[in-house]
Image 1 (cartoon, helix red, strand yellow):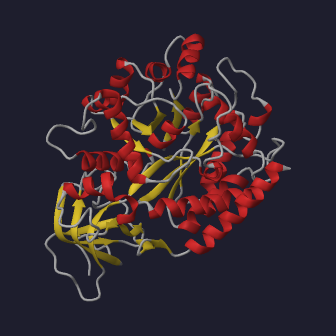
Image 2 (image 1 turned 180 degrees about the horizontal axis):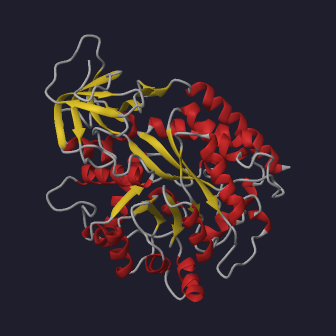
Image 3 (image 1 turned 135 degrees about the vertical axis):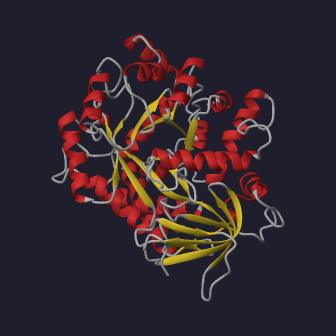
Length: 471
């Protein structure tokens, strides 16, 4: 069968209830091409012979921010050393941990992490990858030795990857030299650009963005050099995660971090400002109107004691956002959204904060995070032929879907947006039955095809890592 453009229908899926870009529809056939992109949607269709049927089908979620290697240190920092434990003391442990990682460790951990993400409904990942060199800081013969392992991990798991190699040059504002424990991260601008070009040349089809780590690790001139050399593709940066960082930026650059970026650089839809936790009213409105995405990681932000993002004001200004797993201390799509909403309620002592009046909050958050996350990862940005937003089931977008279990007690008999409320606020990941990434089924009956192999390999890596740390 062909559609009017003559593109062959290489595969299709039938959904009884499907969340499309313009709302819920019944009995929908979705067809995609050999590249795994949707090209035809037929509502009110009839189930074809031997055609796969899904009961509740929603677009897959983009995980816009991840340091996959940190999954292996999950819960290692939950011992109280003093009443002043903070993000900065957690970071010291992370530095000690990262010193022991090999390229093979990085690849095996990534594959396990990405498998867990798929089982949770994430169908794409933005890897904020800053581990580049050997333990003593010497570059590998292949500058992409570590990055290549992340790519292998994504392919092994079957997730769609946007790779965001991190530029890291300083330990703090004022161009302070990196400390010894940061030497595996560090590049100058020329070496970093060589890495970017190497990755793009050797991985056709892979989206490779740029990621100045933060304003304390990359000065304004370096960020501008990177932008000049990379005029297209995603741009991600950590910003305003901690109050100490905001104060240091004011002292050295004369402005708050988000304020400085907005005033001195062309912040637009390419950009993802990760965390953006501590913004004043002017920064909130400026970021919202820029078209950039705020990259929110509620579980990690809570774990590290970062603070609470100002959600209601940002939404009132039509701000875009997505969610990420960041440190991967826990990988749980529903919990990221649930904690985002609940943190607003706790701060404001009120209910239903992350949705406009008249909308279901779970459904509203899911739509916004799916769209914002896909934008941040550069998924057909602005290229959907029907003008549909990214992160939706629409022609031109990836054929990446999540099927929810219609018989789960928290979803049974629910319809339309109430389904997503029941899933996010009650059922959780146990209600995910099947997952497709660009047309390929990667989760079947709630399990990844390689779950045993990937888990055993991860366990072996973890055992060896902990042994090396104890020596």
